[in-house]
Image 1 (cartoon, rainbow, N blue to C red):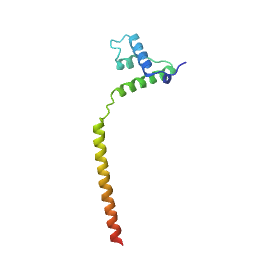
Image 2 (cartoon, one colour):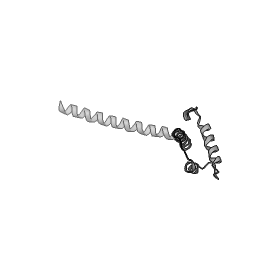
Image 3 (cartoon, rainbow, N blue to C red):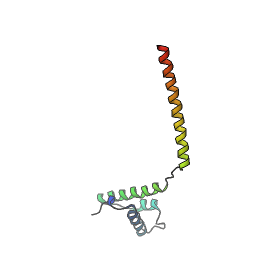
Image 4 (cartoon, rainbow, N blue to C red):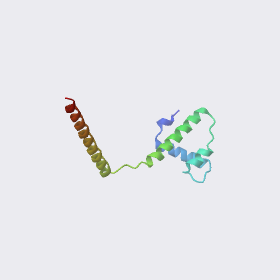
Length: 103
């Protein structure tokens, strides 16, 4: 018996599409309809079904990822570095003044 986690994401998506088409739904890509019409009886099948839903959801979330451009990351890096240097200098100066006043 093959576990859900041994399958690839693509195999699981194909299986979900096939089951959706078997159930007679109009839109094979409609995950909401698939989710509503699926009847699961055995506990083992429930675990498989939850695994399929999870993998399907992961695929959708990965398709929504938008990475920042190199230019944006570099500009943000420079801003953070300048702020850190400014604050380090400020705290060093305050510490130096406080030590000299105490002596």
